[in-house]
Image 1 (cartoon, rainbow, N blue to C red):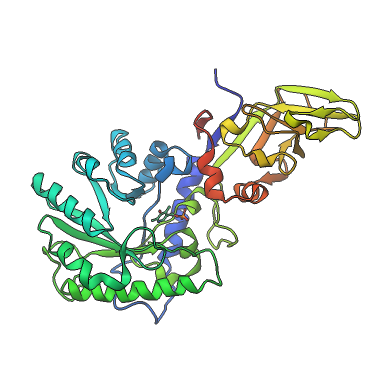
Image 2: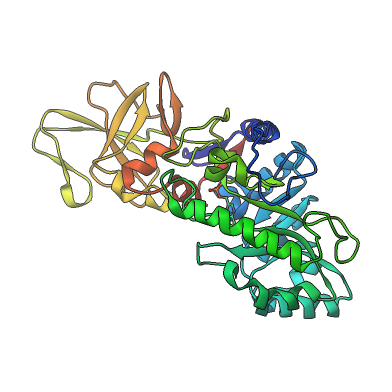
Length: 396
Ligand SMILES: *Cc1c(COP(=O)(O)O)cnc(C)c1O
């Protein structure tokens, strides 16, 4: 027995999105302004982001489907997420984006995770842990180029980096940064971040004896460190920030960061559906739901749908959003309750058991995550991540 409200996750669509992104960045437009000699040895690769339970899609299933499609490196938010992926049998390399707390460093070694080092303090803690395990641990160095969140400040590297670069048990595997305004095409900060990152790379290259450009040997004689920077929006916008790998999250799940349009062929991976569990007639003047916020101004029919804010559906959908029933848009009316919402289906001949689409396609119409986010004044990332744990994910 499963609840009528289910999220369908189309793993074939996910794999095809992944492949289309791989193809998209594989065709690098010739650009004479490529940064300081960090030309990749081959086409840029893709580093799929599966943090936050793969944006609500189910990290384990998504990670395995991406592995099957050829992904050799995945990124998650913290050591706990990485540990869960390993426990599920994921074999690919796993990069941890987040700040490392000193207490959970054992997970890096127990589960073969690759840490991001973004402060001198973390560098010392990870070096000490690696020495304890008698291992040489590869890490990604994060540079803060203006987001002012995690990372070594771009303008202070000469002071902050030498100790890390000399760490006996740590091996620089990659350098990266993160953009704060990649979806804003008018952003000056985006260009500044790109230029600061180029300068930081040149500086790191010099400080590491030419390790990035391959002019010198790497510190330990291992593989040349590589470079990544682009989230979904940045990879759509600017080939100059593709470097050796791109780091899409949202795009993989078939959603384009607003307000951008996509040059990549993508299909939405998740749809959210339910069934009508009750139909109620209202006389003119009667109200529906908590607060009595909907008043029928004509003889009306209300469908009851068993999905509410406990399932991650936003209260602000009431009076603004719609669901698809019998191929029509039925406005969400009254109030989104904890376990239910109501839709005005007057004139639609709706019966209990009828299919309801909350996110996805029905007939000729579609309600996508971008539309729902815009309706409630949120962003698609949040809409996806909030789809509740109570909702069963069905994988196809
Ligand atoms: C979440 C995240 C991404 C992916 O962002 P999207 O906008 O979903 O593509 C990339 N890099 C870092 C560091 C992130 O935290």
